[in-house]
Image 1 (tube, rainbow, N blue to C red):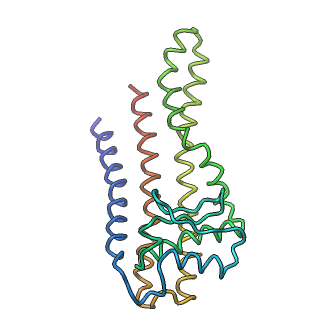
Image 2: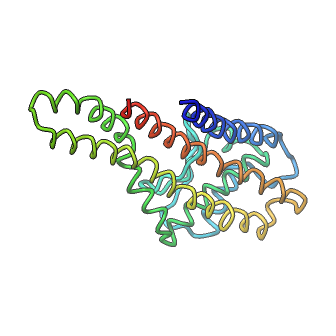
Image 3: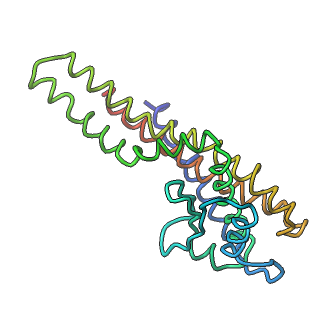
Length: 229
């Protein structure tokens, strides 16, 4: 019992730690830097044009976080990134353009994440309904086999978000360090002295998805612990 509680607390710390560190890094390097050639939005527009990313557009969001939308081929940036001339905004914008580059060159993990993303919004709710109702359905129809099938399908559906986030990690790492960072350095969009900072911001961006992965594991763990009672 104590080991179970300790494991739960450790997982909670691992989830909150990267999230808080990411917020700290983003905020720390979000000060206006006049020496930068433009804002995050201006850099994104410039890169899309320079790299000839066919059909890709850059959009300023009114709400929501920065992301790349493969469905509409859009680099979507929050106001804080689109409008600001800071290291955080420029590096984050380059990271999202990195996803557009992945799309352009057919990076397979991006496509796999895209396909999985269409189902993730419904998985946890669907799995919860199945796992809560399977004992009552089993009793009502008096069929243990149906109960076992429902339990198995519920757990299987619950695993999908975990798989989704595990696929997401290499996609984010590639967009950061194989696409965005070389673009920033080779294009001289950042001073050389800012390269370590850019690496730190890109690492923080990737850690956001580490937190999401661990959150999915925590939800899975909670359900397994509940079902074992």
